[in-house]
Image 1 (tube, one colour):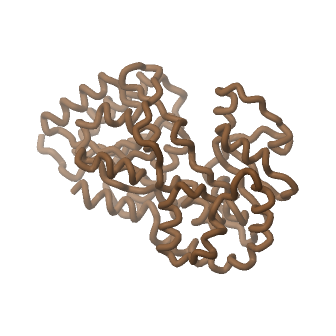
Image 2 (image 1 turned 60 degrees about the vertical axis):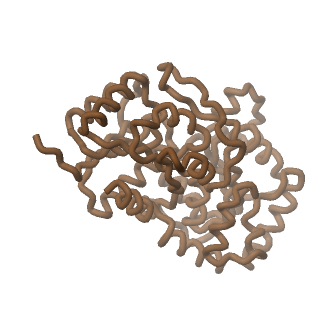
Image 3 (image 1 turned 30 degrees about the horizontal axis):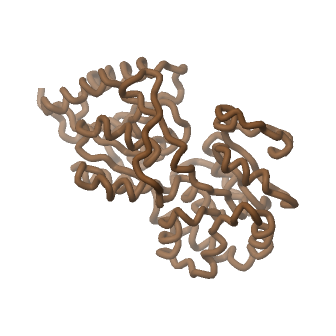
Length: 350
């Protein structure tokens, strides 16, 4: 049977809701661009053990016989799957591509299986630079301009604090004093894993839960500012290559500089993303779209020691920058989208 050289299969991540949202954004972008592709998604399935996920993926590849297979963050692949994919590649049946959205936290998991991939797209610039001779290419995350959600016409909330609550982020929430109108959401799982004692009063007397994607974007659309402390480099992901239950990945680089999806989500929805200054690419991108050094200070996450005091000043001065933020949001919605990223991917895999 002759190979269809244009046949594409996009496989989303089965476990992580944040990664899965990126995969869904690529699905919408491919549809928008008129790409002929098949799509595998586990979000509506019953919870599966990782071995069943791997079995289903292999069965789908064999059934559809795609020539190009694009995985969203495939650190869930196990040894038997790797061997099968390596055989497919060796026999010229398929080419495989990885879209890493969790670098540098899960980079080592991909390095264990890197030889099956023709190209590895990474969301972290420093990872791309370090492994540029090993088929890694930089591909930042983006704004999901095609995601359906209800936009607000007003900025009634001062701060969106929507995040996975790692201990360092929880400390920032505890540091908020005398600031009203704060929208809180996200997973507290890391606090439970680390046996941290949670003060429910910090969460406004209600433990937050993971928001549906449309509700998350809707919340950003009526907030002035969005908390965006990037994940600590030491909070690593897992690899399932050697063990079915997963092992924590070794740390690959000492720091990261690239933006996370929340950066684009917040700004694309019109909020001011408050970023840690170590993520220098966030600020380079803001300068690219004409944000002056003076206005740039509004996008810097205040130090935790005087977090409330400085944040209150930024909130009070918000009207000075709101018109400029609207222009920035429009630029991001037009230029830093998954449509743009999908075009880049398609041009490279051809």
